[in-house]
Image (cartoon, rainbow, N blue to C red; front, top):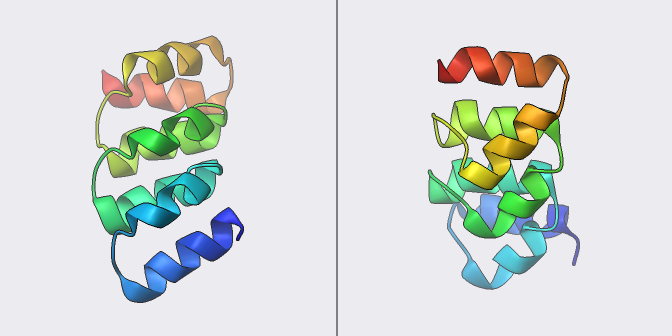
Amino acid sequence: MTPQEAYDKARALGLRIPKLEPVISQNAKYSCCYAQMAIKGRFILGEAAISKDAYWSYYYARYVIKGRLPDFMHNQMILNNNEYTKQYVKFIK
């Protein structure tokens, strides 16, 4: 099962499905979407994948956890010198 298939299954049911979380957590996009749809807060298992993508890190901070990223993600985001980093810094101020 792919991360998208696992996410689609959870989304179709509208529920958090812990047994699918290890699969979903392999992908930044689906980790963010799952956190927003099913968890409505931090998805710690998916944060490693999210932290590798500047766009999804910004999205996670802004729309999922609605605040500063956890320290390891924050530090990695600050090291990215791109447009999403600039938006993130403005957002957390």
